[in-house]
Length: 229
Image (cartoon, rainbow, N blue to C red; front, side, top):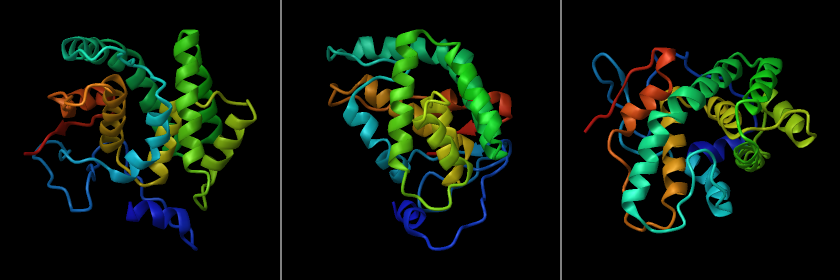
């Protein structure tokens, strides 16, 4: 949260420190993470600032890609989650997120717009609507951050209807702006989807193997995640 407030109220622009797509480490807490041998560290902590940015999306209650259960049923939640993680996530969402990340990492505004527009063609109308609702809410939450460069241009394009503003496109850009690793960004996205899916299950703990699932989501980037105890 301190890092977020500094970003929102700094007086001098900082040089971006976003790591390369492969070979970066995941900073998931204020402490220095331990790096797992042969992989990228991914400690079981959450990024408080990311969850703060996501608060508007959670309050809105509109599901993004995984869904939202209306009945409190743990068995159904686990089944829905499993299907999501084996199907849509690695086949459709992961490749889009990685493409958006790579374009944003280069600060390539035109490439970000192209990736955002292309994603629309892969979604059914209702899912597309939900994705853009969440994306616009995320971009709204970062409106007052300074020195945003292409991210501000992207937000303006979305508000003017020149780009759809899908959540995963926006999250890739925002995560890089806040100097977050690809691994950490993937984990926070999964936490958000799980939280929306199980919104009415008071005792729903994070599903096991979240690090493995996040790794599958971004595996084409050469990222290997390992959850540390």
